Amino acid sequence: MLLIRCPYCEEERPELEFRNAGEAHIARSTNIAGESDDDFEKFFFIRANPKGVIYERWRHIHGCARFFNAVRDTVTDKFIMTYKAGEPKPAKLPGAAK
Amino acid sequence: MAKAAANTKATAASVERRPALAGRTLSAPGVKVEMLPPAERISLRAPQASLAALSKALGVTLPVKPKSSATKDGRTALWLGPDEWMIIDEAGNDPLADCAKVTVLHSAVGISHRNVGISVAGPAAAVTVNSGCPQDLSLDAFPMGAASRTILGKSEIVLLRTAADAFRVECWRSFSDYVFTLLSEAASDAAN
Image 1 (tube, rainbow over the protein chains, first blue to last red):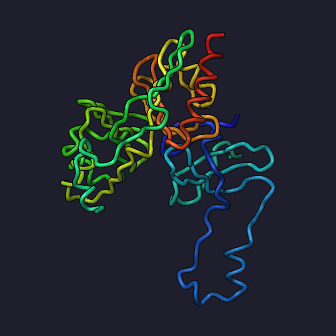
Image 2: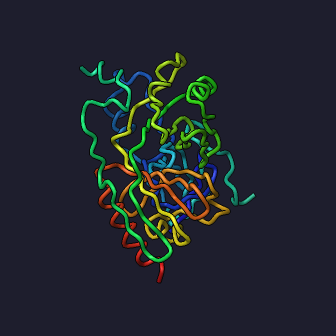
Image 3: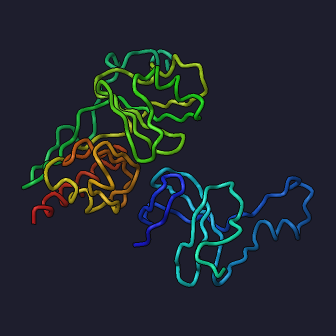
């Protein structure tokens, strides 16, 4: 079983307590009514779906119930790091080439 | 009507209370699983700034460390999340009434009848709970007083370690049959 570190519980917990909640760092327009259909489609439907490192929202639903962000490798399923919701994208990933 | 009910003390409830699975027990070699008597419970949400006032009103200091709990005079406060606690009162006092006097920002919801408590006690208690709960329940990782919302099989539970070899499992009453049965089966297996 995968162990996922919850930044609020400050420890690694079994994956069964977590739920994926889609791609992270997608900002909603401050003027959503003025968005063009194309821009709205990009915001609402289009996701990067990369092969490799992805930034995702996760929720510790059967634990502290908090949303947080995780950096995960879609090929190896390895969680590279997790950080609290609202924090900026980490500039440098641990273990990445210096 | 609802207002009158809110003001009634828990002991003077007008409706007969029938706790789920009341009195059910199961003894297996090394572990005993039993339904606990009814208790008063609230779900408490509050920001950091309100904690001091709420702790004072409740008579128990709300823990801020993850996976921890605090107990005083039959009342236990369990840390569930950064701004969420569950208060269990086994002494018959109503924590909801205590919170009602507090003026600082908070949300307290009575969940006494939503939950039931199940005691799992004995040398094989950790093995029994671990049969459905994926958390590390060794004394290093989950010491006495540790509390956490987690899962047991397919049901969400709140787990509290009351002693080195005893747990309190809190689950929703509609899940209680599933949880009790799963724990009973696990208890029978735990000795083997």
